Length: 141
Image 1: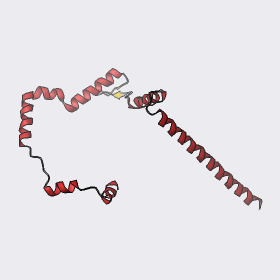
Image 2 (image 1 turned 180 degrees about the vertical axis):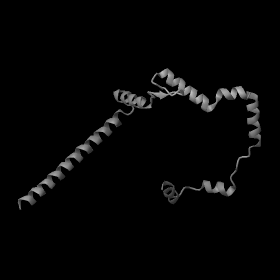
Image 3 (image 1 turned 120 degrees about the horizontal axis):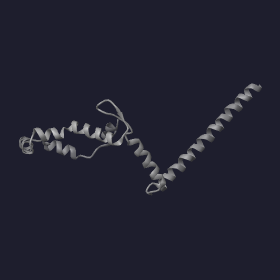
Image 4 (image 1 turned 90 degrees about the vertical axis):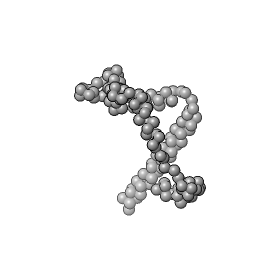
């Protein structure tokens, strides 16, 4: 019947189209990989373009300040980061509250009393044994 033949032709043409698209796609992937392989260690336009894209993605374009305003000025963004990390690590506060000698004494006292855990001979021997295929499979799960 005519309708069945049309349907079979449609299916056949779709299959051919799909195979053609897949082959073109595979060829494009191979060409791209070859291009990147050939130009990987060269400082050309490709590297510049890729670095520019990575730099743009890593850059902070706007930031909400501690006052709640949104700023796009690089100087203000940098000072906000400095303020945040200074407060986070409290570097100036530590300098004001505790002198260097006090911190040095505290560190020395801690290290003198510090007793790190040591391995028993059995544990050390077990760590020296080669990794088995089964252990590797278990670790990768």
